[in-house]
Length: 310
Image (cartoon, rainbow, N blue to C red; front, side, top):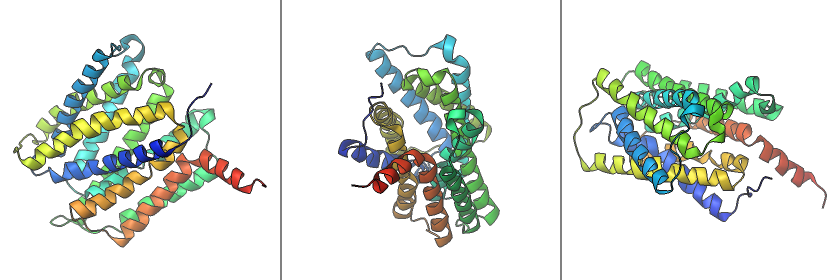
């Protein structure tokens, strides 16, 4: 029996805080990029966060991983998580944090498209297809309406946008693998552990190959890493999983549209990134499309209640 609750004040408040934290991710990476390359930051934070997750699971006497059942999909999500953050880290070298976060959070669009053709229960309704079309129109508008990042050519800025979009696609495929494999039935912390381990182990040699291992210890770097390790990769993810266990996932998913909006706002306020009209228009179209795709069931229920006679 489904005992998950509808949204209440507690869940809504937590989701606002979580979306703020997730929206701050690219800003934190970008702010410390001069002191440590983003992919090296992500590798380090993933390793430290994995140790925290292991410590928590051991303290609760939980099984770390179920190797016999999950090693193949676990390996897949580890590689996909690595690709997601490789593309994210590299995108921040060429484009703004606000643009990167909007393109990264197109992931539900890719997941919905793939699941539509792989799982009968995931077939999309006309309203969701309208959301897909709206989101891709928003992506096109955001690409066409961009301005060159200071000190870089237009081609490099577009490359950064494209890499962030690839990160979103990688995240979307990760969602599909988790949904369609044995990982769907194991505790979420085990899946998170596979992802964190994959990012840590694979991103570090990539940083070496790309000559991005130099770093300078500064207050900004320490603050950024502290936030990424303890708040983002540990506390925020655990709260997210707690919400998914106790509240209706569709309602929570609708609220996640706030993340790219926070990302744009925080990039403008904290990093003084330009907010181009074309990009804002595209971002709003993407967010509207995400709401239609992720919240189709919730929207249908709301419309039925609104139309029901008193």
